[in-house]
Length: 153
Image (cartoon, rainbow, N blue to C red; front, side, top):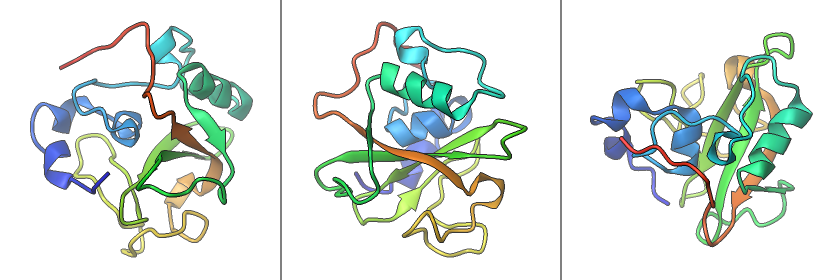
């Protein structure tokens, strides 16, 4: 998957998608949240890490270790990060085909640079501001995500 900024910064994807939709590479799916694809969505704010991971698994993602299957040419890889544990906000990034990470925040342009302006090659070394706590790495199965409901813009 290539870092295709223009796809995500044009309407309707620009204003109607979020970081999770971007990480999943579903520009027509609207605002998605973990667990929503299979009706397992619970309140997003203040969700414990274990519950977030379960929602991602319920959506069909597969948790992987950082060293496993980290080849974006053969596997669609996303990462979940967490803000302050007392706030409980999460953020999602994806690994692009050039082995860099990118993300989208609200209506902003997608970016492959951290808050220090460096291209993100290693999440553990990147300046992600409040989202530096890496919850886990996940891959999308080759057959894609099966879902009971889909929203399309």
